[in-house]
Image (cartoon, rainbow, N blue to C red; front, side, top):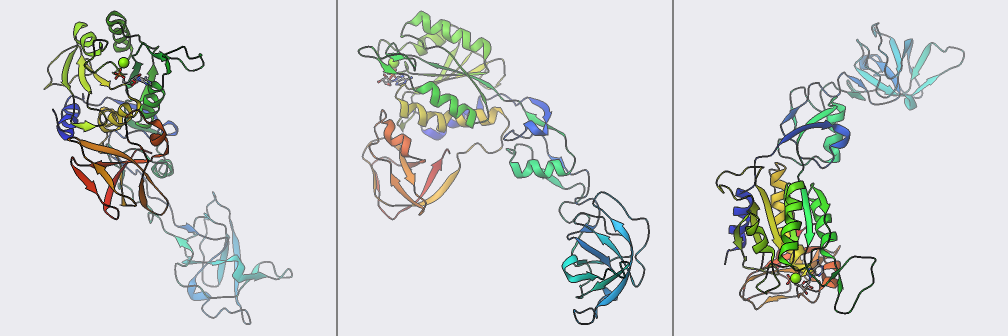
Length: 411
Ligand code: AMP
Ligand code: MG
């Protein structure tokens, strides 16, 4: 059976090269940048005032105090957005606001709170405190210098980066395309939400989970109707999904039972399996393949990736975050496809007495301690619902309370 790392490496190796598109910056939150972006301008673009106050020459106001103010002649006023054509000469000042360009000749800004104007002499400004040279001045380029790289190829755009890109005037940005991911659930026992449950039936929950995880991975989900455990229906459903999507993810029907038709349907319609079964718990029966069959060494967007996840809801969830998520991110050109991790201290022991690595559900509390989310069987959604991470527990291993662990996060 394949080890997790081998399975993940062969999935990533099969992902085709990412495709580029240009989009408006306003639509780019969470998208993956297709090339390094450098700032075309200095930021701020000009020296400007950090305060409402007066542009001065610091040497003119060294003696200014509340009791004995320095007196400066008011030359004019520069609102934010305006410029001043004159010069601040010795003994003079200019009224400024936050963001007003610093007039030439001035080398500091005295904040308004440290000034006074007597109504009888409105053109004389009393300066009640000294300022150091360049105090309250924001310098051209002190944030970002022209030509500096502000985002790197392969990075997921954050809101902070969007703010910076906007400030440098970037209205459109090259990003990698997002794949459309077809989502199917197989199983004759499955009932659509909103319908009443007949005897022996259960509500279908995996498509909701998978679609949400697809979106969290930056991709576009397309959900298909339920598929009964009938070979022909499975085949037709896969054909439909491959026609409309870049990748297809199914749940159920990949075990060894005679009602498990997914593998057969894929190969019969001209696809191929690359591997089946990974040495992890939950999620051993996991199919990776593609349609149509082609050269595994030369990934092409025309050969679409296929992921057949196990039907047990926790197995589907865990195999998605461990094996499908990295592929969706790589498809979009992401440089980092690993799940975020987070250091925590185990609050209680986690025991894996099996032969496979067990990705156990835990809840990391605000105190930084990781608690078991409870019963770990692959059909237990209650423990999935309260968990916020997974801990990779090696086979035949007990991690004792107090152990420092890496928690894999998906939220
Ligand atoms: P399978 O992998 O098809 O053998 O299914 C394994 C278990 O998961 C069975 O108990 C199924 O009823 C259950 N199951 C399969 N698919 C789903 C689904 N989409 N939603 C909820 N439970 C499912
Ligand atoms: Mg089934």
